[in-house]
Image 1 (cartoon, rainbow, N blue to C red):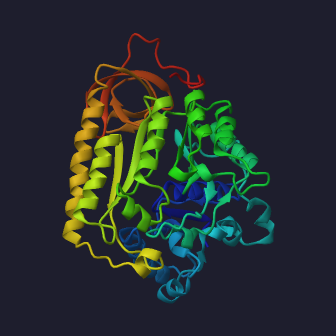
Image 2: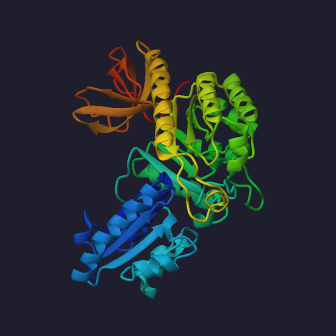
Length: 441
């Protein structure tokens, strides 16, 4: 078997974080990454099942790998992530050529299963490393796995299991390793990241973890996602306001703007409770950027109830709205107990209506930035321009002959669209700012 591996990653940033950690372990055991499946001796697929389209992509990839496996029977194929959940019988029957199906709840065993031999087991445990390949400027770190919410439309609790927080010291060691390898921004990840620590002994809170991570040397910026409104505590608001390296940006899914639909979704909050939370956040952090998630066409959603969602979007004026049309996920409460009764064309109409509204709102918000100075963390180059993100997580492009990768710089916004900004490097500044500085408000 070739001593090379190829990782195929689909879905959320947590899959990306898990894949990066596995790559570190395999590298430390003497393996190396391959550019494609054909050059690899081990192929690992990190799968997503949040929507049917995500599962369809996985099925397509496995169809391709069936013929590759027939030509190269020594190729080890492994499927992990949400599709490889607790019930694997159907997948095993459909894809008998796959060697390993590893559920998200068993992901810590994946390196041992791949490396296999007793001689390699000391290298199998995911450990922090102060050396190794250079990492991206912005890196996600999973801090809590699984979910206990059981929203009626969501398959995640059934596939990823109950909430399990990683120990604080383990997280700090991983972040320190990433910073030593070139990371400048860390994004703490979890399905409900603001629930981190409640299952630890003794219990901890995300705000304390954020303060600990923010104090690590070499860090330029810190973010976290995704938050659940019911777990967003006052000390988190205080942390965003008080900790300079913690960016003024928050992802806070609402999912629907109608109380009856929220009840049927099992979200366990009302619209007024959500908007009151937003008001409290903005009272303390007036310039915070808010993004949210919305599902349209949930079973039983009337036109009037959908209009209530539009009303909330107009009221709150989010910076970004991620919108999806409802699709039943087998095994969820909604799929078992509710009729998917909103026609597909109507779902699409509602989705487009939200997209049109949000395009106008985002354009108006971004236009206010024209002429302003913004702090930019430059992540890399794209189509001949430097690409970076503001503290509010807005994408900005600028031109410069300097090597700006990984630098915190000051830029002046010259043009704005709904999804990105264009600017120039502030020439009055003494070149790029030091990434060792804690950032500015």
